[in-house]
Length: 253
Image (cartoon, rainbow, N blue to C red; front, side):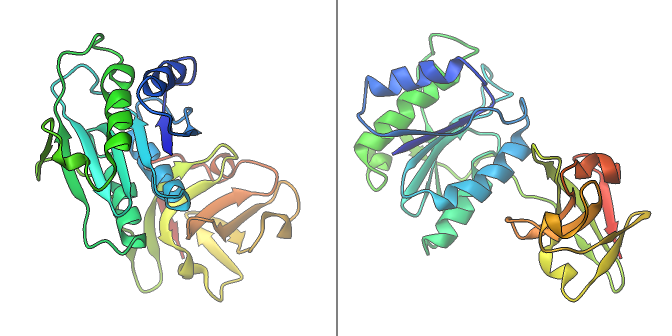
């Protein structure tokens, strides 16, 4: 299996699939092609949450604001998985999570060398898609033996900010907002244990296990599937109701 993730929308993913299907008969599975444009951190967050539920595979990821520059192409081995994409940090959070779930001791990062591509604006088609197909054919255990794959310890990493947990207040940040308008924080879900309501910045909101535990249109605070504190509205948008956007500080007391 090869999974595909990008911020391309359409029709660009079809070209990547065509390139790969000329080189492999792997099953191609789309994760998402509607990640926010050029938003490396948001893509990295969702990949970390989604890819651990996929069987061993090669994961092609193209969210690449630096396309056409001298930034490297990477292949990261994480347990039984390999991730292929640009050297901008987008691969690393998912790779670490995959390695941990596969009980691997650590990730291994390789630079994939490539000749001048046909296009300086579409490395997804000309660089990363061929690399993903070839790595799939070589096998996750063996692709590092290729002459054009070189181990490296110099690469862009990406870590999500840690919350500040004080005695009576936790200070965190909105990491992402999903398509439902749920505002996902970096605050751990156990912060809500035993609480019936909390103060979120200047607003009081009930703590609920499910969105429908409050009336339609009412705010709530819950623990999302990612395990973090999430600000939501039953049948509405939490980001708008709480007046928060990605990157904003959030205080919970």
